[in-house]
Amino acid sequence: MASIYTRPGRPTYMMKYYGPNGRCIRESTGTTDPRKAQRIADAKETDKGRGLPVAAGVGKIKWEAAVALYEADYRNNDQRSLEDQQRRLRLHLTPIFAGYRMSEIGPPEIAAYISHRRDTEKASAGTVNRETDIIRRMFTICVQGGLLLYQPHVPRLRERNARAGFFERGSFESVYRRLPEALQPVVAFANITGWRIDSEVLTREWRHVDFDANEVRLDPGETKNGEPRVFPLTADLRALLLERLAVRNAALEAGHVCPWVFFRMVAKGRGGKKYPKVIKRFDKAWATACKAAGCPGRLRHDFRRTAIRNMVRRQVPERVAMQLSGHLTRSVFERYNIVSAGDLTDAASRLEGQAPPATGTPAGTPAATTGTDGRSPAKKVRKFGGAARI
Picture 1 (cartoon, one colour):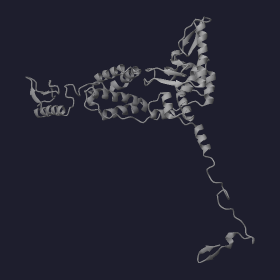
Picture 2 (cartoon, helix red, strand yellow; picture 1 turned 90 degrees about the vertical axis):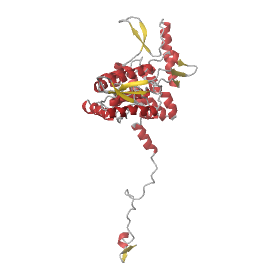
Picture 3 (cartoon, rainbow, N blue to C red; picture 1 turned 180 degrees about the vertical axis):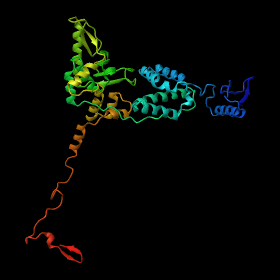
Picture 4 (cartoon, rainbow, N blue to C red; picture 1 turned 60 degrees about the vertical axis):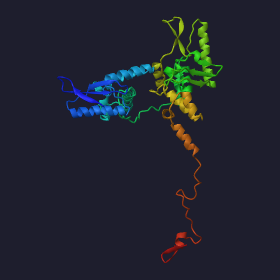
């Protein structure tokens, strides 16, 4: 049974109880009232009987310690967005919750934070959701580690700013023609596969291309979800890679070993000898081409939506399309499966011819005729007792 006592010269009551492993635990009750102190000690004993954590540190972890655990979890799982998470913590979350115990952060505090970000700082719903996701994960880590007994509800706001851009064939070809020659195969590859340009297309090396197996692959850890991925070579994709192979062989004959599929030849100084250099980004060239093609502001990520839409329109089963594009959840996949105005027009054309042929006047009523006596049928009506008969 838990007991309470005071130390000489200190009015605050201490409590003494034993943990599940039989270890004696002593800690302050935080009160000078003996009855309240005994209730706190008895609660510890009750929690032990229920199998709940009763260590001295349960419920006392502070925000700063939880942040350290969160960052350690990110590093241990090799998450690539740690810098972005640290920025959100440093600029927005920590200035509000610094010094708090995690047990002191409940639904009212979280709601106040959301209102502050939305009303005062005009942050978007998506931005706030990314920040509250951090809070939710921090609570999960603390509960799993036995540092907290419960996790409060952390609401998610409805996001209405999901991007919906994609390329129709005409606009794609217009942008394609205006890009530098070295960048054209990059966007053509992305338009077919739907792979992410920066992390999944530009990073391809020839060891990822297997002409015998007729596939190009992404190794484990190279994708956003960490899962490997394979894309079979279509006729267009195979022809594109064979052209790139010819360019690579030409560079090899010139004495340049190039492991990358997509590269451009650059010179050291004006008129210098050219050598292959991997393409990392092409933001400026992309913006220039889009503006010249009459579609400024388009995103390279639009190719991902375009490829998924094309797969679905060509009757590729959705489960197969999700595997090719790397989507794990159907909800995210559906966000990329965009319906265009052309799709709606095509659907309307398929619904033509269902109505019966129109008869009579445009209003659908029989046309009025004139009898042989020059009178209309209405004039031949005879009334009997208020009922009209013809």
